[in-house]
Amino acid sequence: MTHGARGYEEYEEPEDDGFFDDESEQPQRRKKRRGPLFVLFMVCILVLLIPVLLLSFYAGRGFLAINSIERDSSLTPTEYEGRPAPAAPKPDNPEGPAPINFVLMGSDARGSERGRSDSLMVAHITGDRKHVYLISFPRDMWVEVPGRGKAKINAAYSWGGPALTVRTLENLLDVRMDHTVGIDFEGFINLTQAVGGVTVHNPWASSSNGYSFKEGELTLQGEEALVYVRERYNLPNGDLDRAYRQRTVVKGIIRQLATPETLTNPARFNDVVGQVADTLAVDDQMTNSYITELGMSMRITGTDGVRMLQAPITGFATIQGQSVDVVDFGRIKMLSDSLKSDTMDFYFESYGKDNYAKLPQVDPPE
Figure (cartoon, rainbow, N blue to C red):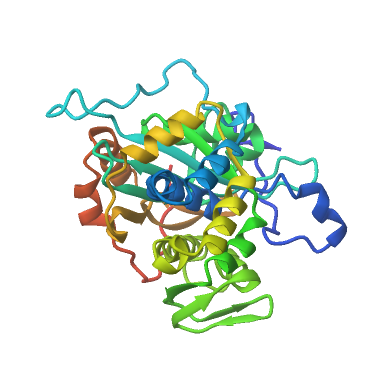
């Protein structure tokens, strides 16, 4: 099948994006499925907790955890002609550190198949190291995939794995991505249990896979938490609302990790750190010394240090029979400028608040 007159192979979105029905398939994919929520968490634990690991009674366990992280060369962003330049420090502090951008991707790989990117996020660490901005990119965003033409953004992973996914993001944002991180999806259930559950605000009542989620405050852990962050069909804005749920659960995990009940409890602390590190994969440029130096440089204080937002879209449309999210290119340009100039605080003040209203159907882009 071709993509219009341009001869591109069309990416067909499979209907199923949930769990395996056949339990016999589970062992084949156990180390291949990487979930974005856990990627997000691991970036947060790197930038928020490494100082604690290094300076606390548990420093020895922390070093062991960092050392056990898998380095995967296939996750390392690749060079190509026309790639955006590396970020530079702010003009008012030319000798200071530059901001850093991590790509956080999760796939639904099945057996030997590569699969799709189940969710896609960027973690932007500011040059002053005081904030981390976590930006969700909906899987149905209709974008230009380099060498393939227009498609949903999650098609990039199916066609070209992490390298093409990173290049697609760089093409959309005109911003260089420095690192890529992934982690085994199955760890989520154990992780939410290890921190004693997470409390979130749920704007929309829904039910899925035998669980019912009321509107309002919820405390989640284990299988219930996994179902909560995977649901999208019973939500008003579909995948956008699922991304919101993922962001709030991540923040809930961070809050739990920052409590004395976790940090001063050797059994709980070791359980959390060990589970995460044992299933983590990062690009091979993220050495032990790099991770340690980054963690020691962080200056985050309080939960406001981690700020979460959605990549901008104008609404929904149908293109080539597919339901897609239409990119707001005006605001993408503003987001791009903010990332490059290390001024995300101004963008966040204007566009960082979640809007629970249902987005409209709009005309397809040309």
